[in-house]
Length: 321
Image (cartoon, rainbow, N blue to C red):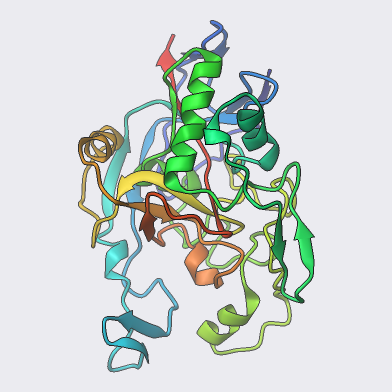
């Protein structure tokens, strides 16, 4: 099942070349850049990305965080001691040289439970609710993103998906692939611009106001993940909720700063060459301030750590026709 998305946006700050290549799926059908496909009835919807290059990372001063958090504890940032997100730099050029399709959405609860019902995913069933900001119980079903899943849980899902399709092409994205997909050709802090609203991304309003130092009556705090088809949350390539909603696991090992690798294939090689205990997470979540939903923001966590604000999306490597 495939459909053509909106035409590739014209001149962008960082170019993703609209190539004419077509790629083969497991059943022999062809897909081209910015087409959407779904390889089975319970499989994620996938969007084919164009090959290209982009500037990875965030420049000093992009983060609006107004506090330091280190071994000595938490202290305010000041004009003489500003917060600089050194872990988001240095900004460097990365060529995306592996053809991929990226999940249109975060993996949903329905998609996760299809794996469980089919004997996969270790049989693990996350809690089907969260407690919202008014202490109400919010039921999570259907197209809510699956949450409270670890990096290892996400890997078990991709293993099941590969077995179901008869391929070895599905996996988690590297940090570079994730950021390329999230930017969709842009260089602003968010794919939508300098800021996002809570109609575009699901993040926490109160700490956002504290960071910005102003009241923002236009922002809301929901206190729970929304369904993947809620909000005007898609970027120019049709990928939803790359900012906010639930944090997303990647294959990449945590590093204190960006290692500066120049291609997505090298990022993948390095991610697979080390059995690291801590992996990069991206995208922020409903429980954090807007600043943590910036495309350049980096988090990290243990491979078996589960959190109600964490989920994942998958990618699929593609073979050229």
